[in-house]
Amino acid sequence: MKPVTVPFFISHQGCPHTCAFCDQRTISGAVGILPTKEEILTKIAGWRSTAGLRPVEVAFFGGSFTALPREIQAELLAPLQPLLADGEIAAVRLSTRPDYIDDKRVEWLKKSGVRSIELGVQSLDDAVLKASGRGHTAAQSLAAMHCIKQHGLSVGAQLMPGLPCDTPLSSLASLEGIIAAGADFIRIYPTLVIRGTELAKRHAVGDYLPLDLEQGVSLCKLLLHHAMQAGLPVIRIGLQADDGLNADTVLAGCWHPSLGQIVSSRLYFDLVSRFVSQGEPVTIFCHPARLSDVVGQKKCNLRQLAERGVLARVIPEVSLEKEELVIKKEAQSFKYNLLTDLHYSIDEV
Image 1: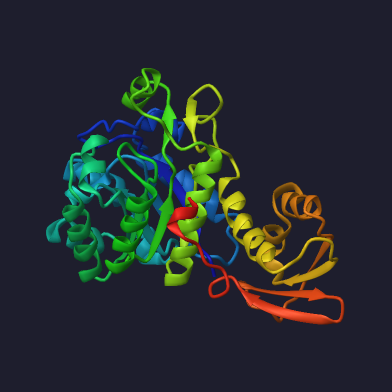
Image 2: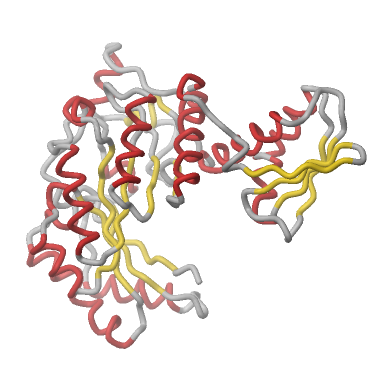
């Protein structure tokens, strides 16, 4: 049963760097003030009251949790200890920088109820990291992932395609490195140019050109498909839409409030497109959980098929796997699998 996650944003807290792309206060919609014990307990109680039978976990997002002074980390985790002991919350997760992970830190976090750590890896290309002002190396990211796994915790990685000096090939290589390191999940955040950042200055004078929406979707679908084939869960694509991200704060880049669905639906559109011909009506059967992906956001997939002369209707079918489609043409039906029957080349990006 999927847990209910109670989020606390500690925007930019603890982080010793201001990366070229970063304005955490804008991204999180928060001002960077740490929550008090009372605020933590009140928020958890409110979320627990609506969680039903689903387990509850607490997450500290934004900033770099392990770069905070140990006494502040302890203050944030202390109110959770009685709740963990009583089973009122199941676990704690947090995000941090790779260069603030070591055995001592992870051992202490594990004793404090932390079960999952997300790392801001962003890229495994040292040239990209340097150009983005990250302040750590790819080797430190891999070492941090290994350290977390060695202590039995779940490890996630955040990847940012489209950073300065990044290419589709280096983004794919970074993903492959994350997979090889044993990541348990990943988030893909295409780089945005946010007002007030160093990247905004570079963009204004023409020194940095971000991925636009179509370029970002094209690259993200390749990364998503590759991750799915490797069995690596992609738990989010694109920063979450909130009051901090809007047309005024996002100056350029691959930005859409429903980016994840756009990318997922593009995979299914590509699969269908490879096996239907112009002028033929088809019926597409898919798992109910994939109905919106096959139809596309605001039925965009059906519209694009119609523009190609393909009239399609989509019907949910519970017997199919989530990655399977059955395409019926006249009296014949053909089954396809997204993971084995769809292939991309890096040259397509």
